[in-house]
Image 1: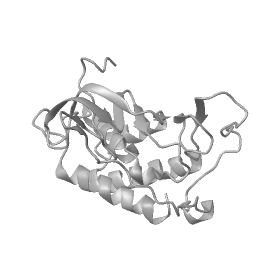
Image 2: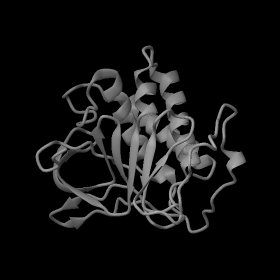
Image 3: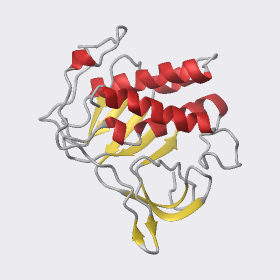
Length: 220
């Protein structure tokens, strides 16, 4: 994807926008008291772990590709084994799919298929793109983004190297909405609630907030 010429899929969560006046302060606020929650508190009844799939190797090279559990062929690329635990990321994607299916449906299983082969690349370095849209469909130039959906189930998501960083404060769920729209309609709708194409609705924005609250409630 040529970020200089192709319009990017802008994530608003934790967004810092470069303006003529400087950089805005729309960045995540991290809770210094956050501690990694016990796994048994967050795993739903149908959650399945797979000991046959190697977890992140602390002695391996980084960035490192780590396969998520439960999904057939979903992966995340991490800079450190400390962020983000693949079980927590898997649980978040499963939660997303359950909520999406209940709200918008997935009659042909396209969203599930896309999630089965999704790839999440975590990065601690902010990314500047030439063009992107905000949630209202306004085209912005030369901006710093917190997430990008790059098509074919691949997404880039900014994350802090701090161990207190929470999944609910990243753009992960936002990018999952782009993935789901792309899977269902053949377009990730980069201009969000803008006119072309009119796929992203206010309900999708509300869904992001709702899911982030769900995962934040269990400490993620």
